[in-house]
Image: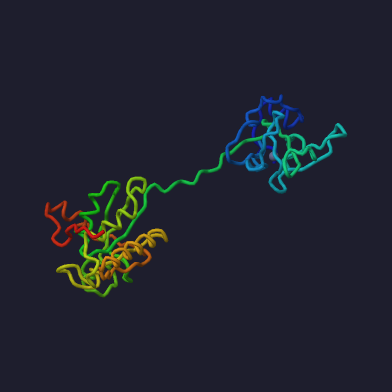
Length: 287
Ligand SMILES: [Zn+2]
């Protein structure tokens, strides 16, 4: 087993194996305030959490608690103090003191920095982009408008909200797949808010038309918001409420997003490829 331990420098060996003590205020962790976990330098076992670390003024990293089961207390050879060692490898960590009144737990694990290896908390990778899915009739026109919004990174035309997996345009046109023609908008929420996109959505198609959009008739042309989370749902419902208060009989359905089936390549960027202007999606101010 010993062969699996980390190789120690002479200084580390002096503390961890020979039970020495590093000079106070000399270690690399006594002032560390980062969030993370302190592991055993020798065997990597997690020992202490940054949330239990406190400033004791002693010049050594001090913790008023240890990860349960990670640290073993043994009577020190000096007959007075209580030594603490790594429960996994027995490596010397320092000493534990009680009833000093320094924290509410009234415990101080006084640990050599040399015995520890700090691992910063893995910062959750922040999703930098989000998606919004709207059905507003023929997706060519909807895609055309969204692709011109600052903060929108990508717009895909496709089908969603129905039951047929991997639908073709012909199948969707039959009206039997349950799918709506829709666009999936990928955007940077730091640049453009979902509400801005949703407002635009209600202004580039006619949300009062039922199962049609202009000349395009059929359930696949229904007006729909496919929300990705509760916040998108709330925004969509609030905007619909605003329109209803203005007298619009809004037909838009608000449904949770399901699989978005990307449309055939020849449908993507249709107006940009053809140089035409959308025939059925004219911006109309409604808010
Ligand atoms: Zn250890």
